[in-house]
Length: 504
Image (cartoon, rainbow, N blue to C red; front, side, top):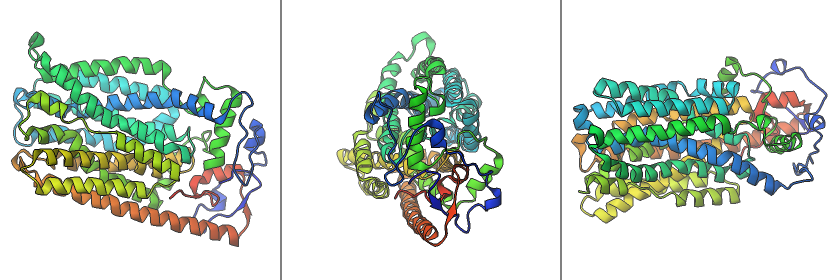
């Protein structure tokens, strides 16, 4: 897609009316920043003192490690309650029946409701300020979670944890999407998302080590898991407050010429992101009127149930294999190499759809084995890994595919927040999928996971079909009508701009 002023296009009949568009302007953004693009190849001239590969490496070093560590900490503080359960949390807090499941569920109430407001605040305050504040907040809450004395106390801390963590995932994905072209994004998304797998691995190993502190200063091992992991998060939050990356427009480590280059190459790939226009609630309503936004939510919704089912209940499930508490933690370390292989292949082929369906089928095969095999521990353990491999490989592709097909700051900010927020309703379902009364076979939990994986697969098929249809519709519009769009109009339309081609 080209972003030049002279490119001719037309507004689709059902898109935004011309009288709602911003006032036309004749000045090209490219002229303003002094960078030329070629309309045919959308190639942007790189500053003379560097190369595109060097710039990408610099961006990788300044963005990806920070967002990966941040989300690792967030996911670790979110799911370590499953590790704590193996060290007598239920007995010490005298939880009964499904109260532990309610402890897991209450986290998702603010987490779901506050996703979109969080991304609006992120754009207003900058990622460095907002995400660092959130990191400090959930680190402090996790620490106090280790000091709770009863059911009410842990409910309150889990609720506050959801308040502070709501912006982590959509905020980080949104930030990454503002630095990379669509053909470059999947490896970065999957590397970032693999932090969830690392959180499972690191969390299990860390919990097995901290669990040995059981009885130190009169505290049970599960309390030390929360306290120490929370304090680690607080330390990183203070560090991030001064070092965390922001949008390209705000990057102090780029020269003005480099900033102009980064913005121009993204504009050549995705159109102008509209970073300078303030977001209004009318923008939120406009984005939510697009049916593709809803399909994106259902794709992620279907994946969340098996993913959180694994994250929260893998220690419980593995515990039924008659391992000790520490062996249970060590056996819940999931593989994350497969997700990077999928990401690299997806970027190399510039294709997303098949790289969602194939991992989903792998996850389905794992759950199918777990449903019918109950007396073969190596096979059951391997099937659990297939489930994790498929789920944690498909999820980053789904989110990347969806978010990178949204053009502009506003549509991407709202769309990604909606996808993650709506999708995490599945987290509530996951928390009640594996009940103590269903142990050790957990047929109900596995059946629920299978059903939602099928929902995710069906949503991916519908979304792919919608993209093909929309691309054909845009091509037809460009052929039949000629309307010159200014840069402001393209900025306002985002991916609704007829020149924007959706990636399948």
